[in-house]
Each structure stands twice: as C-alpha cells, then as structure tokens.
Image 1: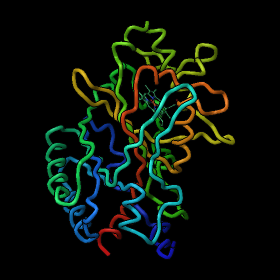
Image 2: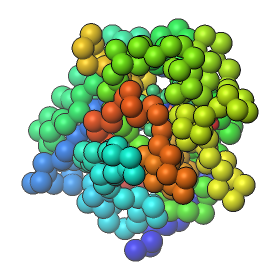
Image 3: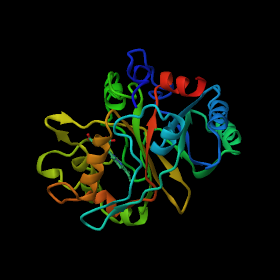
Image 4: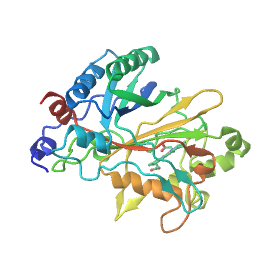
Length: 309
Ligand code: HEM
C-alpha cells in the first residue's frame, strides 16, 4: 500500500503555494463531484488546466478520500476519511456534504479571483459537477459578519506550518488535512444580544478583541470549546475562513488546515457537546453548519507527482 511512501514522506516536500499568503481579501470556494465515468487521464488533464498559475491569485487543490484513492491508489494519508454527519448531545448537528475535488482560490482582487474561478470551472466542466460555488471576502479588520475579529489566535510565522502540515515521515508529509464548512449565521438573533452577551458567546471582547479571562470566560464560549490541549499539547489548527453571502443568506465559510485530522475532530466534538463536560458551543445557537467536508491538500511535490507521472 505504501510502496510510494518515499514520495510522500521525503524531506523535500513543499506545501502548495498560497497556503500562507494572508490576508487574501477575496476568495472563492469550489467543491466538485467527479463524474463516475471520467477516466483518470481526463481528470488529471482537467486539474492541470484548472490550476495554471494566474497573476495575483492562488489556486490550491484538495481531494476527498474517495477521489484521492481513485487517482492515487498507492498510498493515502493515514487519517484521511470522508466527513460524516455529526450530532451533538444538545440537539445540534453538522451535516456531511463530502464531494471529490476542492479548489481554494484566493487573492487580493475580486476580479482576479473571478478570472481564476472561470478558468477552474471551464477546465473541470466536462468531468465534474460543481456542488458548492461560493465567493468569500474579508474586510479590513478581518471581522466576521458577527462583528468579531476572526483569526486572531491563529499560530504565527513558522508555527503556522507546524499546525497545518502533516509531519515529515508520515504519508502525505508537507500536505494538510482540511475541513470546510459553510456556516449560516442568524444575525438578527445574535444582534438581539447585548454586546456583553455576544462577548460571552465568542469569548473575546468585540471592539478591542481581547480574550476574556477567569470567571468572565464561560466554558460554553466558542474560544473555550476550541482552545484545547490534549496531553499538554495545544490542538492548534491554521484557519483561513472568510465571510460569504448576501443580504439574506450569509455567514462564515470555515476553512482550516491541520497536521492531524484528530485536532479538528476534537474541536468539532467539543462544539457539539460530545466531550466529557457535555457543554456545547453557544455560537451554535446563532450559526448553523450547512455543509461539511474533509479534504487532503497534497504538498506541491506530491501534487506534481500525481499529475505528471
Ligand atoms: C460560525 C462559525 C464560526 C465562527 C463565526 C467563528 C469565529 C471565531 C472567532 C470570532 C474566534 C476568536 C478570534 C480568533 O482567535 O480567531 C474564533 C476562534 C477560534 N475558532 Fe472559530 N468560528 C467558527 C467556527 C469554528 C469551527 C468549526 C472551528 C473548529 C473546527 C473553529 C475553531 C476555532 C479556533 C481553534 C479558535 C481559536 C481559539 C483560541 O485558541 O483562542 N471555529 N472563531
């Protein structure tokens, strides 16, 4: 099974370009199902055309577990699985909408990003069906539509790579496990809360973006549910989410990269109320996940090998 593991765990692996390019004021997300009859050669040709470099835009490509097996039966990252629906102790749910190929397209200019979206769609149209097609944007202060700054506690500098990349020696080294979830906000309900109550939901102050401390920080806040240690190790992930949507339907398109899928899974279970304390994330009262998928973003080295062998 791991006959090709030297390819996937060598020390010369490079992550796909764009991973660390922040802030990326414009983004677009395309999740696609491959046609059942599409041949490997046509899929490879289409992906190569889809990700042709474009000025000012980053186009990363990721694969669902089944699609990865279909294109690369020789080896797979140890923890890669399709996302399955999750239910929470307190009646919350996270649906699964796993598909095959995911394109994360981002840059600073929305027009440039749109040109890349059209390139990807045109390249993929004969061999796939687009099941999610969403534009994302970031405002100057990287505030989510709730008004709270999103991304502050992300790891910084090289620590982003420690959090995001599968370590050397493991199948898929230099690549990432990825979670995407489209969360739909219920802003009317959220804005009926006082600012103090909103802060208790998130776990940080709204205006100044300072983490709540001591008794001020509820165990049900979003930060309390997601800032977690296992055996003394912080379960850090690298988040690159953006707001999305229009006047009526809007929210956060959650996008995160992790060195180990368990880190993401632990955070989701804690949000749902499935960890020992049975507490769920009060953010789930005001935002509902509508999609959910796990992906493998191969390193550039593994991607080149997949597309050029
Ligand atoms: C409606 C969906 C979500 C919204 C609006 C949201 C928003 C936020 C905000 C405002 C913060 C505080 C600032 C920051 O450090 O970034 C935060 C922190 C965080 N969120 Fe979320 N988030 C959402 C979903 C998720 C999900 C699904 C996960 C995990 C799979 C997650 C993981 C985290 C983590 C790890 C932190 C940092 C905690 C810390 O170490 O302080 N978030 N989020």
